[in-house]
Amino acid sequence: MDIKDFTDTSNLTFELRLQDLKQAARDGVITEQQAQALWQRWSQGQHWQATRPVDPNAPQPALAAVATGPRFSFVNVLYYFGGLLAIGAMTLFMTLGFQQVGPTALMVLGALYLFAALKVADYFKARSLPVPAGLMATLAVFLVPLIVWGAQHLMGWWPPGGPDSLASYHTRIDWRWITLEFATLLAGVVMLWRYRLPFMVMPLALTLWYMSMDVANMLLFDHRWEWEFMRDMSLVFGIGTVAVAMWVDVRTRLSQTAEWRQDFAFWLYIFGTTMFWCGLSLNDSGSELAKLGYCALNVVLVLLGAAIGRRVFTVYGAFGVMLYLGHLSHEVFRESFMFPFALTLLGLGLVALGVWWQRHESAIAAHLSRYVPQGLQPRA
Image 1 (tube, rainbow, N blue to C red):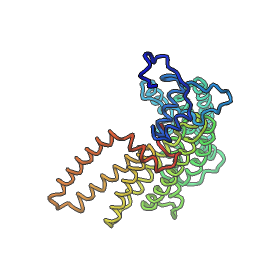
Image 2: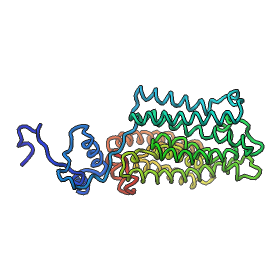
Image 3: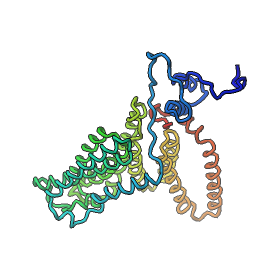
Image 4: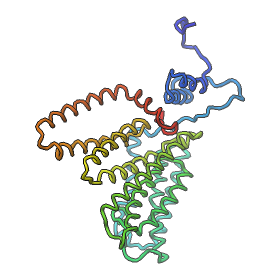
């Protein structure tokens, strides 16, 4: 019987299980991502409610719904603007006059701020307000360096020399900050496990970026500045951070709990890719073959971003390709008459490619996702 045979389908109901959608995906009727999106939509009752199995002993769905991220709205703008102002007051905008109260007072004040921020985060989270809760918990993570710095000065454990003001923590590279960074990572991971709010990963990723520079400063003889070593250390830390991001991504996507299926890898991808790409792009090779390899690697980044649904790879990859084309125009073919015309045609071709890509982006992403592990496939 065809569905058109029904004169009135408004009351048509049937039983739908997650296994049915998975079977449809295996049969090629829909993609795995579409199956996940449909189950999430129907099981939450956003359009129409999927009938649950009548058998109470039937297995529950193996895949929990993915929590959606915050939308761009005026309320969220107020949340983030206010939260980032509070974070900046205790970090970038901390004045020297404020720090003249002494390390003991700073440590106590930081601890009180941290306790208050966590209590407010508990209050917001209990009322299902994840954005302000995440901002308050993130503020607590940012206060850890202040507390540790005050404690080290109070106990006489601060290494001699170097910065005498905590305000330099965000502006000056120095190996003495490493203790603050390790403490921030440890406390941040503990608080992240407690609150499970994705924005809390941002200070951890930022700390890894700081650590890449401070560790390089520590390893250098006499702790001097050496540009090439700093660049290579950024490259290594970037690769490591991206690897951690992928591990976190896989674990969260395959989690059975909706709370852990949130996008905890976002900020790790942002900072990790930035460190990796900057370290890679600042390597100056005199070989044209190496520069061509650089361009090819950036093309791989573009495809990788499409395959796993991470646009940060695509953006940086596109920048890398543009840098290589700029090198060709200014160095290799600078005296060529036809190169500007060829580059114009290439640019128009890229525009046409962009139009085609936009029309077929879902199909392309679905095709590329077949070549990556299930845990790294684009989120529904």
